[in-house]
Length: 249
Ligand SMILES: Cc1cc2nc3c(=O)[nH]c(=O)nc-3n(C[C@H](O)[C@H](O)[C@H](O)COP(=O)(O)O)c2cc1C
Image 1: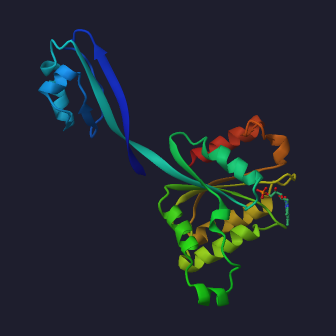
Image 2 (image 1 turned 90 degrees about the horizontal axis):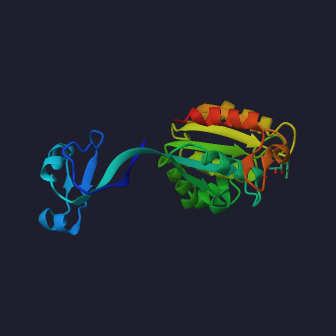
Image 3 (image 1 turned 120 degrees about the vertical axis):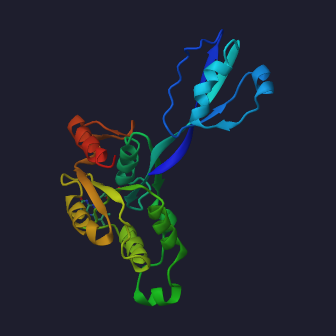
C-alpha cells in the first residue's frame, strides 16, 4: 500500500487552554504553522510526535495559534481499465464508475488506445523486441496496489485490442498481473453481459500472476446503467458491485 502525505489544518483562536486536546496517531508528522508572532519565536519546523505533548504548555497564554497536521494515510493506488479500445466503451464507463466507488483509492483509468501496438507475431517480436508501450503498461501494473478491469466481449472472447496488448506484455513478463489483487468485471448490451469473456479472464488470471478477489458481470448495460449520470441504476447490481470492490480493501 502506498503512503501519501495528507494535510489537515486545525486552528484554535482565543485563549489557549492547557487541556487543549489534539489527537494524532503514532508516526504522524506534525508541522506547526503559527501566527506571525508565534512564528517569529518558533520557526516552522517538522517536529516529532513527542514534542507535541509539550506544546500545550509552551503555547499557554498565547492568544491564537494553529497547527497544520500532516498525517500519513495508506492510499490504495487503483489501476483501472476497460479491455476495449472503443471510444464509447460501455466497459470503460462501468470500470470508471466502479473504480471511483472504492473509498480512499487513488484511481488511474488507462485507455488501451494509448497502448496500441502492431499485431503481435513472433516475426514482429524479432524485429521490435519488447516495445516501450508494453513495458510502460507493465510498469503501470507494477506501480499499482490493485487492478480493476472490465472486459468487452467480442465473439465470446477478448477484444483484439486487449488480446494484442496482453500478448506483447506476456512476452516481457509472463506474470502480467504481477501478483496484484484484482477485481474483474464485464458488461455488454446483451443479456449475458460478457459472461463468456469474464469466465476466460477469471479462469486464467492466476496463471498470469493475478490475485483474483472477485468478479461481476453486468448484463444489459443500457437497462442497468444510467449513461447520463454515469452510474448503475440497478440497486441489486450496485450492491453486488460494492461487495466485489470491498474485497480489494
Ligand atoms: C466483433 C464484435 C463481436 C461481438 N461479440 C459479442 C459477444 O460475443 N457477446 C456479447 O455480449 N456482445 C458482443 N458484441 C457486442 C459488444 O458487447 C458491444 O459492442 C459492447 O459495446 C462492447 O464493449 P465496449 O463498448 O466496452 O467495447 C460484439 C461486438 C463486436 C463489434
